[in-house]
Length: 234
Length: 290
Image 1 (spheres, rainbow over the protein chains, first blue to last red):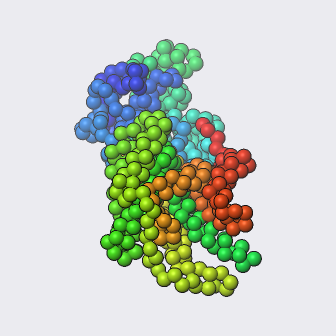
Image 2: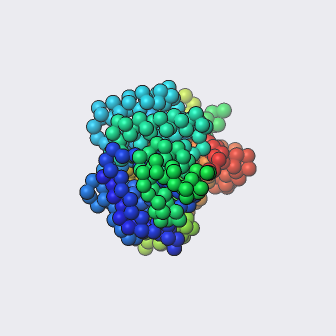
Image 3: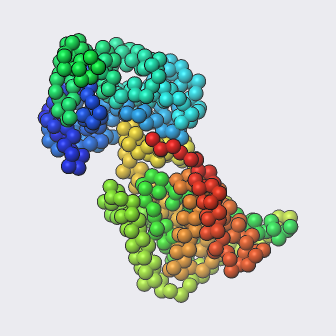
């Protein structure tokens, strides 16, 4: 479904991604782990069109998408739930969710997705008229996830959804991601919490200073000595 | 007491114009991160636009005003595309210098086209005052105030309820996240700047019949618009409206009770006081960064 081949990305002179190749198949839950600054967020930003690769190609459903604007990429139903939640602080919860469906036209199906999100996160329904800045960090993460769902995405990319959340909220986020995947949404998950990410996913890639170091089945990576040492605190 | 109310009413009229200038400037800053020093020149050109269309060519005043707005919408689009878009990834002072250069260019261009002698637009409405109780209102002043309020209200409703208006607000609050929703943020810049330019030109066309029209009239209006925007809280839409109206009334009262010589100083006294007492502006919220 999604395929990156030999992607090179630079931030000015910094070589952020070095010949990164990876793929995500339809219905899969794939995770990308790695240390701070390894290039995980850069990878997602490149897929969603916020950064341009200098070399290499990105294909989504057989069509080349690198070099397209983020607007065009969103139109292909790739949702990017960014690091740090990035909800619109002075818009209401409802308006935030509506922004998630910005490129969609069909009003009735938008409304039914709104109900679906409210069902998934009842707290958002309760607070639908409040500004997003009034929500707690965990609630804002729910809102960010709900907003991504409003696109009716074929692929959702989550960037550090557990960052800065209380353990109980992390559990809720994990539950939601697993549930979305069960319902058939393809997911690419970026996490620093490698243990959580590897337990949740089927396959995984490990990014090390801009390169894919290790890849394989998540259950194998959990046993891998290097991964244990570097990312699982073992 | 009657005199006091008369000053307040006159002040609200000028204040409506300041508010119009302020909302354009504040949105352009908030969305594009551009400090637009040519905002006052758009105002001046709008006044000349109405002078040319209404006084010289004899179009009806309303049509001249409307046409001026449309012309300057496109003028703003061209400026955005040719000057501001190529600079959008540069530091803020680069576009600032560009708009300073543009303002010098535009006022000198006006000097060449319309020469430096002040022009009278002439009265589009009868001069007979309408008396409401003890207060006298001339139709032109009522018209200016109502037109300014309608434009502000229209802008507010657009931003609040329209789909693209919401996209503008989203871009204002988080540009990157808005792009991730599929908002064409380049188009948001273009529309915001064109709209701000058109509104400034209409403001000039509205106030033109009351004052004289000349090529350097934009300078002081530019400075006052900045005062309005900063006093209202940078990037704050309701704040700009409130401080615009407040400035108009303060000027009118100051000119009436202290001395009309101080009229233009009041804006800057206001801005100093607001910055000392409330550094984030009248309605500005203190925000934590990060």
